[in-house]
Length: 235
Image 1 (cartoon, one colour):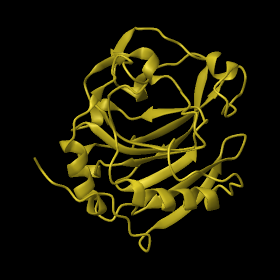
Image 2: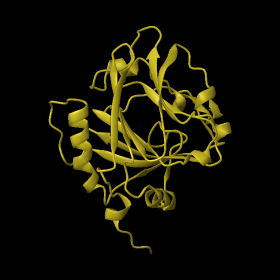
Image 3: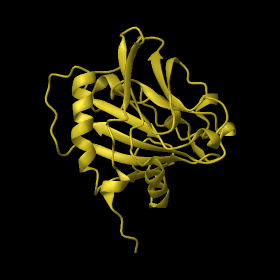
């Protein structure tokens, strides 16, 4: 058994943060970028790779085409800073709670695996704000295709849905079991178009509204290892 200190693993140093924001799409959807987010990103990455994960390649627990670990202990020091950032940068007026239902995960996308085709389609997280922080260094992949794709529906011109998980989302849900390579850059999705790609870089957290249509974006042939991320979901 290995004893860990979560205060080291999930430590942040907001003095070194470099926060920027910009707006994209027809609706001017805001994206917030925080560089140097974790104080000890190498320690965090080593910890993430040492954990046990749940397989969800065939949709066992979610639509994520890979492996998921739900983070439990040690995440509390992150909660108030994240809520503060979201409140300020998105100019939110509705108060956040400082307990559940916020969720934090590590996610691994295994290069070279076959997944359900529908797991690569655009989805929404049904939370107020979502965030993803890449735990891959630039020498682990070639090119600049590591990111999160934001989508617009060609017919309805929708870039997002309302907060309630209702008929708007169900219009676009598909449950096909066709198997394809886990290669999001090279899949054609009828009636959908990418209008922006949020670039990922090591230890940079990007925040966006959780009900924007989005998906992971990377070219698996350019990767030398599995794609690993820290994810947060604020409600």
